[in-house]
Length: 367
Ligand SMILES: *Cc1c(COP(=O)(O)O)cnc(C)c1O
Image (cartoon, rainbow, N blue to C red; front, side):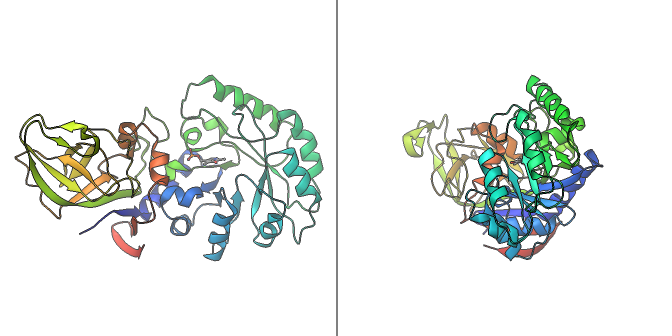
């Protein structure tokens, strides 16, 4: 019996990278591997993404793990360093750093480094999260250019706040500001996340930065992954561990939030919020068993959920249940749990065994 397993289709990841390249044929690809490759397993995904040009992570520990696994491609620290002391590790491991505040810039320029580091200068064009101000770019660039700590020419980057809403006015405002800054900039530049790769082709620049689309999830609510030609990489599965009868009027689960409208049957599946299945998933969230769709009945427990199977189904103990994946888009589950697919993918917990598949052939098992 498969209990709480995440199958990761590495062939799907490679296919999705091809989709990125089809949309942005003239850009290099900085593939996002942060947060354990959106829950898919950093090292295995890095190896599958051999055709990417660089990898992006949010924590130094993630970059250190990739280097320890033998990954030699450029790795960009998307938030840069948190303390100047980290710069030695960054230099020694040959990592790239983002610089996004004046303080970071100053401590970078003042550091005594064993070797130079490639820099991605991040400018805030209107999201108001990270980045120096547009009017600070030219002096920051002049202090970086030719400095002994800087490898090559700094790359200018920015990030969209609303790229998933194609017609949001902020997109054009941010892009116009970035374009203006590029007039003074001689080096490479980068702006587009998945949503912008698919819907704002002008923003592709020298480097695109796909995350969620590599994992086969649509970044844009109105369009499905299939419509973009993306293949979901993760299938979350478990098994039915009990089938039981329930009488009309009886309730199910903690808080007794679901009541049987008629005599019916339930299947109990060994998956819960302890595995990363969202506790917020409401009554009626779909689950697929034997190619049929059934619906969540009652609250998600730590280790289990119940679904109504009715009196006519032949679902039995040991049958495989799919919580999300190719046959059941994670976008639906996110909607039923009032969250986004990103959070569901990152939230898969350590006790869920990952099984890596290459196309249809299983190549590797790892807890
Ligand atoms: C995570 C991240 C991305 C990728 O975003 P997706 O929506 O997953 O494609 C791109 N750029 C930066 C700076 C990021 O942190």
